[in-house]
Length: 461
Ligand SMILES: Nc1ncnc2c1ncn2[C@@H]1O[C@H](COP(=O)(O)OP(=O)(O)OP(=O)(O)O)[C@@H](O)[C@H]1O
Image (tube, rainbow, N blue to C red; front, top):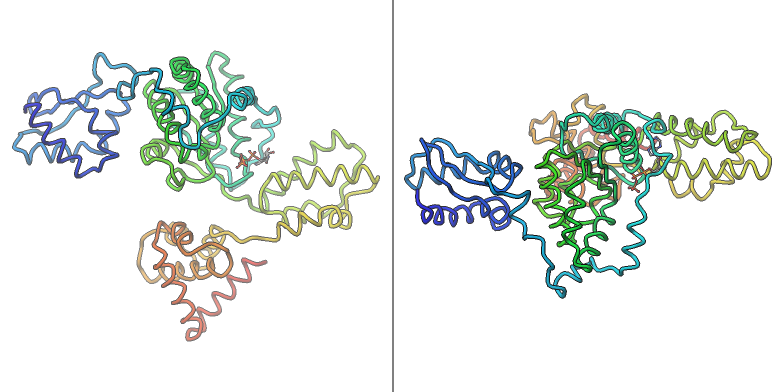
């Protein structure tokens, strides 16, 4: 095949895969030769070769054959003279007007310096102080595995979950463990915000080479709260290249986010797909047992500061039941109770708790989540959670799914599109139809009316 023919094929591929995919994956491919039925392309990096091979090889093969080439296979080889990332623009002083103010990314030098100093690890956030329960056991196990520092098995590890569920705690715990087990490893932990600050500062000071060198020479890169870079185009671009370069060198990357990568709005698709390449695990909302376990552990810690403060039976159980929003609030409540009880020289009993925490208790009146509803409904109808969320249309799954959607609409403040997303990415019209159907059935089918009522009670208990 000639280069010219490959040029024509590329135009066809552009139409099929779209501009973004094309620019990222197809454009950098260089056609080398067809040898014994194998079309060989050179790629800038291994990572890219693997990705293209998994996602676009069939398409390329099809187009080659449609164009009259007799090719059985396509192969991707890393170009011999390739550096870590030749597809990216070579490090250079980028023209100031364009880079000095990437959209929403401009900061003052003072901010940048402050941020640079602010990446210490919290001494309290270790594996020892992390309480493991059902909602976080998988995330904990994955974090432990990565913290062993053995051969890289999943890359990146992405930990995600709602506010205050322990993402940062786990990230710090991994970093502590890696630093103590493998002091020789260069472990860099920072928030996505700090990544952006460093990047913008490097641009301003025309020190991109230093920046690239710094980030490409780490052994483990840990970026907390990656959702922060969403919508910040230049930072995402740099993050993307940093990511590729490190994965290519088989260096471990660990990321945290407040939601699943696919759900982070304004995060470029290519960044999302990178994040989804490794192991993505979520920290589920805490359950009662986990909250109680955390409270018991924290009580032990407070005892060191307040040895005289006593805590009455039932108080921890009450708190675990009533404060289900997030662990940070739970911790804050306990700290306040200990401080207050010590000041007034009283035991922490129910009266003191109600008085001292009136505002917290009011604010955290139980909020029912979509996940809770899905779980309860699947238990009630004795089907798997995945069948409620998944695509199966059988009546035995579809009806419970509609019941769950109905309850989500009634008991949460989620919008129809949001509910649809949490039911396997369904459209809001599907949710609307489900809700209507259950409203009708409640009037005509006693069994459904009873099911809905039982579930509502169980959820509100
Ligand atoms: N399983 C747990 N065991 C012990 N402490 C926990 C656990 N989960 C969370 N915490 C504590 O709750 C507090 C909040 O946790 P952390 O800062 O890690 O949350 P986060 O998920 O990073 O939240 P954010 O989304 O706000 O960044 C911390 O003090 C942490 O130690």
